[in-house]
Image (cartoon, one colour):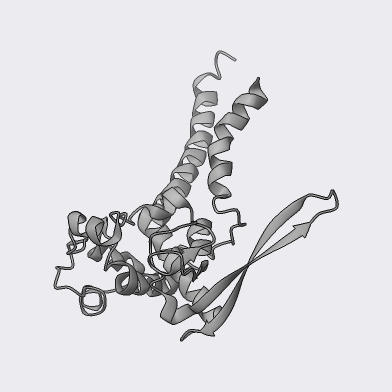
Length: 242
């Protein structure tokens, strides 16, 4: 019974991890790398913030990454907002639904909802598909409605589907992407750019995580020291009885 309950609880996670039928690549997450997070914030503002908002994140929170208020204002605030404003967009939800068929989701906690590995694989998994309205599809998110906004950087990929037979005689489809038109970046450069972007999305989902982890360590150290003091105090207090 316990095994059945465990599988039922785990089933949504397993289904989510295998969405699209492709293995997920490991995202290079390092929330202590402020240079990577700064580069990711720049990519986010220039390529994502046009259609996707991050309404629970304020520009001035980027000061935690080592940026000054003037640097944020000059390089990341592109539409005249104030540094203390949230990362919203001018496009209304009604217009977005009319133009795209659905409202682009807010990306503040997308990394917590989807997972960093999913995002990293997704942003590198676009390929040309003439049957789709946007001309693009994705190996991780089949029939995706979002166009490939980074295609000028990555280039054009095409999907090859091959059938492989395993040792038991079962046939499996293997999806392989081929880069047929080089973008402005090489593959390692594009992977690094996407890694920085996903790193920033992971940070944006919980900007206080590093501080929380540091505070947790300090609290545990305090409790450890307090336990020693309390132990010897207890021995001194009860010495006449024991």
